[in-house]
Image 1 (tube, rainbow, N blue to C red):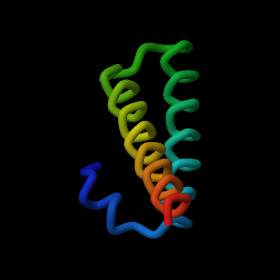
Image 2: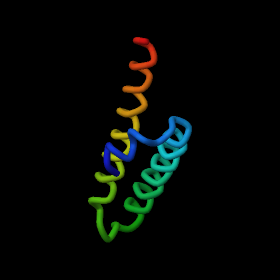
Image 3: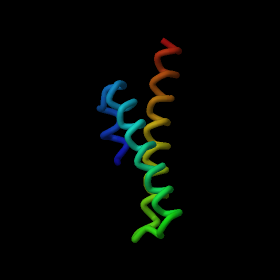
Image 4: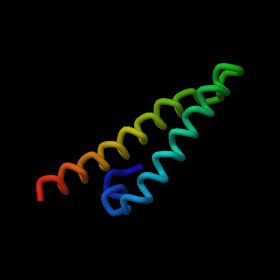
Length: 67
């Protein structure tokens, strides 16, 4: 997911996306423990998406606090 897309997304949708991605990550980790995933790099990519979403939410909170 690109940062430009996250910049345009409303905060409530970002929170929903964050929950969805966290659920997706936990399910992937569990399934990877049971039987290896076909592409284990997806776990890393999902973690990066979560970090991008959290960063955008953090930027917005800091910007609103400084106003």
